[in-house]
Image (cartoon, rainbow, N blue to C red; front, side, top):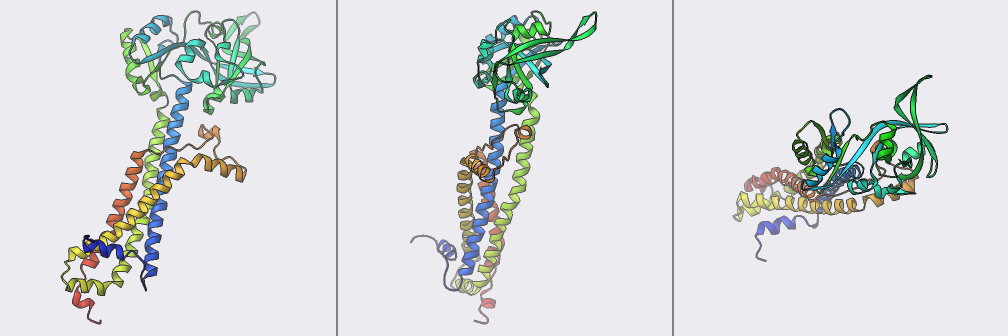
Length: 415
């Protein structure tokens, strides 16, 4: 009561009445198709968001937010750099490190890796990798102890466990009467870490800073200083300010530059998937055209009677537009609810499906992680719903325009 009759007509045509149950069925199918399209789009974008978020978290748990290095590959005044870095606002920790390539051997097994020499206490403050070590702790790395902590994939490749010995061979050689021999040192495995990133679990090993400096004959120099910040997105600006405050002459880098290809490819893929899957939503939305055209064809006599009673073309146009908008609103709302529900439970559903089929969908060697995280951003959900509803509104214009153009005399000629 009190509603305009256009609303009453539009909603009445949605309900099944005698002789037009098929048309109501088509309306329901159109709404379901739209709901499936919206849900799929939300789930896919949520997976891309979850992948980006998880990748960012795992990268920052292993690498530093920013790095300052010497132009010649070594940094002799690292203590002054560290002290100056800690004075800058937003810097949580500044940890010196030595980084170089090495070949690790254990019996018949050999694997190349990146050796990172660290100060255990500084490293614990700088990154979260210290919390991911099992079978030991980062404090087990002591000066002169020649102990090493390996990624779990690297330990598996070498077939070692905690307590085993590995031989580290540095690429630099020693000149001896027998010729140039590789520099070698035996290390005891003190722990194994799992970062969740295969690139690091397979290609990174931690040793004490001074042990690494002795093996690579760096003396008191280090490769650089790694910074941990309160806001990781401020890394480019803060590390540049640090270099300028020290007078320049340093090479600076940050996580946004080192891993820019990862995140750029994710954004490009996300944009492409949005456009491609939007076509599915468009097909579902334009199914409404077929449903409304059939309704208009069946209701030509009703429309003609309304016109003879004084209904203007705009009133007829509004009635059928309301019908199409109601289908679009129902389909979009149902799709958003279904998509958010699936996104929230996607990881559990994938694990259940893997157990049922006895397979593993994501190989961490290829996808950097073995899980399928999903994170729905409300901005994406609103954008998807707005675009889907807009397509539905556009789809209703043609049949509503045809209904509004019905001529009463022509429609009632044979009635």
